[in-house]
Image 1 (tube, rainbow, N blue to C red):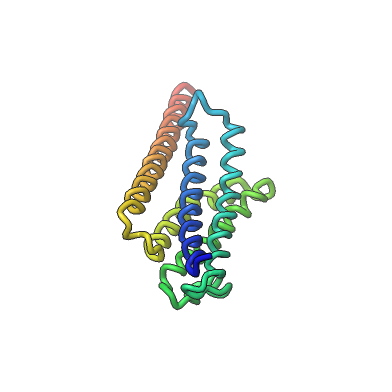
Image 2: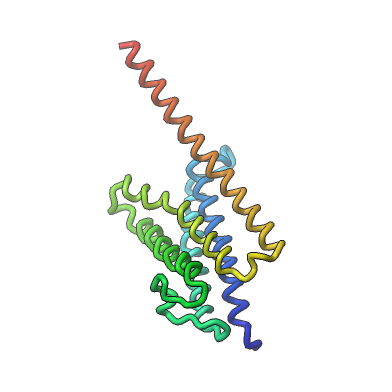
Length: 191
C-alpha cells in the first residue's frame, strides 16, 4: 500500500460525502416540492431521503476515519472533534468540525422527530441548507483538489443544481402562501 493511500482515501471520501449530502438535500427538495409529479411516489422518495441521510453520516465517518489513519498530515480525534484544534488549515478544518456537529443534530432530530414539536423539527431540518454551505466552504478551503479544474467544474455544477432547486422550493412556498392568503381574503369577503 502506498504511504499516501490514506490521504487519497480521505480526499475521495470527503468528495463522496459532499456529493451524498448534496443529493440528500436535493432529494429532500424534490420530496417537499413534488417536482417529479406525477411520476413520484412520496413514500419511496421519503425512504430514499432517509437512506441518503444515513449514508451522509457513513461517508463523513469514513472521511474522518481515513484522516486519523493518514500519516501525511496529522489528525487525531481531538483535531476532528474540537473546533480550532487543528494546526493544519485551522479555519477550514473548523468549518468541517462544526458541519459535522450540525449534521449530527439534523440526523438525530430526524430519528426522534415523532417526539419533537413539528415546528422545532422543521426548523432544525432547514439547517440542512446551512450545512451544505458549511461543507462546501470546508471542501474549498481544506481540499487540495479545489484548484483542479475538473473538480471545480463538477462542484460548481452541483452547487448550481442545488441552488436552482432551492430557489424553486422558496418560490413554490411563497406562491402557496399567496394562494392561501387570497383564499382567506375571498372567504372573509363572502361572509
